[in-house]
Length: 155
Image 1: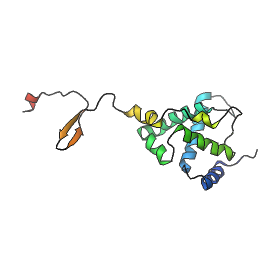
Image 2: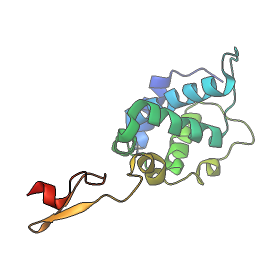
Image 3: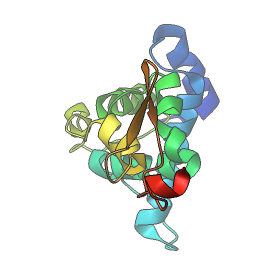
Image 4: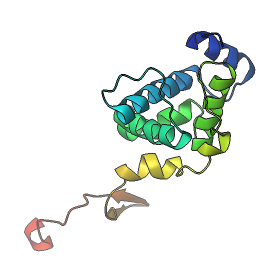
């Protein structure tokens, strides 16, 4: 099997599949590198296999590390909305011979990942309800801490 350059593979994919952006494919590659390194620590492994579930976990961890609370909007800007999208991109790269696969690998390995909304937004959601105050016709969020002054002290 010829060793195709990653950039050439991505260009070939983008010429026929418009669902995902170029930066998303490079992020998938970086996520794979991150996952291999995390799974195999400092071992010198040339061709390490990563399962779909392992890649999705590494993808999640790498996205959180790189983008924090902006992970979801960044991924969505590249057309990546779910684990199934990650799988579609991986299989596009496999079909272009930029990634390898084992006999046990299957596109459905990427389908049962948690919803991205939960994975990337929930860690940054308030841990308790946000208090609001009515100002005219708008509900305005106020501090999420108990007031330190009483009404009498404010007058």
